[in-house]
Amino acid sequence: MDVPNDLLDLYFRDVGSVPLLSAEDEVRLAKRIEAGRVAERQLAAGAGGGELERIIRDGHEAFDHFVTANLRLVVREAARFARRSRLGLDELIQEGNLGLIRAVEKFDWRRGFKFSTYATWWIRQALQRGVAGAERTIRIPAGVHQNLLKVRAAQARLDAELGRPPCLDELAEATRLTEDEVRQALAADFAVASLDKPVSDEPDATEFGALIAHTSDSPADEVVDRLFVEDLVQTARASLPERSWYVLERRYGLNGREPSTLQAVGEDLGLSRETVRKIEQQALAQLREAFRRAA
Image (tube, rainbow, N blue to C red):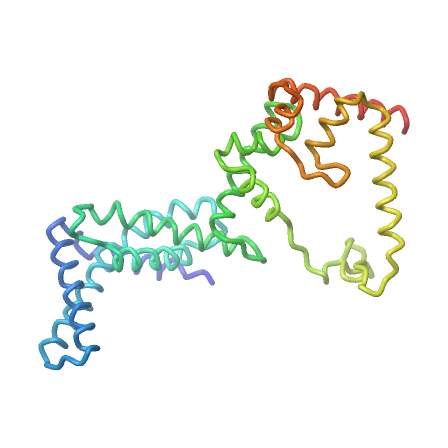
């Protein structure tokens, strides 16, 4: 739900009215928070006394002050994410605040780091998780979502540069991900449609759900599809030289094989990756021409 702009303006004024912390302030507050945690453990272990309770309350107050004084960090990062997310700014701020709270919990004043630099990482992580969760009906891990964004960008760029869809190893090289990570990201790149959605704009159009086969349906259609694919593979096999067919068979995992990289195929054939790539491109061009003539 979107928050009215006047409420956001009020929030921004409140956030901006809290003075920024100096490095000395950060250390002082962090020490009070730490003392409160120690007192909590002592109290839980059976130690008594009103002094422990006072230290605990003081630690909680220091924690709240630390968070409040850094809320403008969240607003800054949330505003950046708002340009590329369908979440409202208020929702992004809520997600970022979770990261800020986590940063205060984990901050170690002994390391000498400035808190804002440390907290920004936690805030961005929280925002990325929030955006990743909101953008998909079926949620995927935030890390996979980030990899998917990288793979999509690389696909668009390489497709324009190469004039063809990039291969798995090319995507891995362009994104600096492993091939398994690219494969996992691509597997998560699917659209979700409602089963109640009509297949057309006609008043009495059939719904998608009515077109989905039940488990009790006959597998005859699946058999026909499989035979059609097998026929295509046999046609391709007969149209290509032995080495060209072997390259395609290995690269695309035909006949039950696992897809292989250019490097792996090249090592088997004693060829360079670039030579294997050229053989693959030529073989695909030959197949397109053969299927065009047969059509």
